[in-house]
Image (cartoon, rainbow, N blue to C red; front, side, top):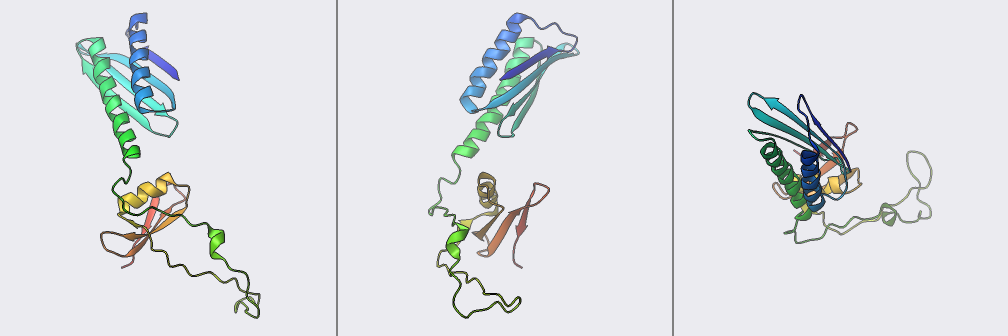
Amino acid sequence: MQYQISGIHIDIGDALQTHVTGELNSAISKYAERPTDAQIIFSRSGHEFVCDAIIHLSTGLTAQAKASKVEIYDAFDACAEKVKKQLRRYKRKLKSHHKNRNQLVEFVNIASYTDKIKEGQKDSASGSKAIIIADSTKDFPKFSVKEAAEELEKSNLSFLLFKNVENKGVNILFRRQDGNLGWVQPS
């Protein structure tokens, strides 16, 4: 992991750099697996020291925190606590993901739906033989919209068809080209 510890109009000594590196190593190794870099900037605002921290993880998460105290070490410690809190919440969100769900989510391979072309059946539009899609008796997974969004983020799927637990209807959640999620709900 790369550390960039700097000060704006403040001389950062070796002792402070060692303290910052040690604290961040222990916090990040506890809550995150693959951090990429951390940028810590110290500055002054009136009579207080201000510490800004930006930590990038390989998962795409960016933890940012800012704290100000009269002592420079106290400012960093308060900032580090805020970063730890963000990382702890992120890890808890990933770990306790749908622990109370009764049914398992089952993703079906697309190739398992198709049957061989049956003799004598033609596609009416093109005149070619039609591919018959097999019927399935499996129930849709039941999610809230938030749970479905989290499930779609975890998977590499482009869409998720699910039964909404709030209104009991079938909904579709999909990835848009701009990176956001789209939600189709029948009226």
